[in-house]
Image (cartoon, rainbow, N blue to C red):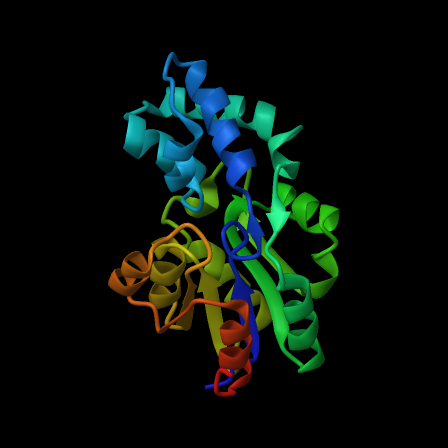
Length: 221
């Protein structure tokens, strides 16, 4: 079915943030005496920041906040821009807008950083709304559920328009299911097809062309 409102995840869907995020984690963990190779840190691309420190390293609440502050030391100045837009994304966003689709970003990253990234890569003009976390992490205590809910309530408060969440990790799919909307998992990011299937994605696509066709209701070429 065609969709009228498209909620896009940022990391692993619109942009490839591997270098910036993994180096930010490496910088942070080294300050706690934990040494990790960059490739072992790609699993942290997507999930809420605090969740990653607590669940993987068993950090206390106070250490988690110290880790977040340390992470932002690197990320806010350098890691933010160690990033790249996936090929075909700007062209696809432009075509979707020309087809009358309303586009928004729904991400676990803070709104402040998300806006800076979108502006830096000249993607900000495509989006009607950005739904991201607060600096204190208050909107990702329940995964991405509240991030997606706020986007829907802002863009379609009466729930009369077809909405889809597009993302590469289980958090995107679970949040869509919790909010009663369809989801499209994309495999060019950092979640596996298996992860997306287990989470219950409505559809899974391997290419940006497939994604475009699915959103506008055409058969993929």
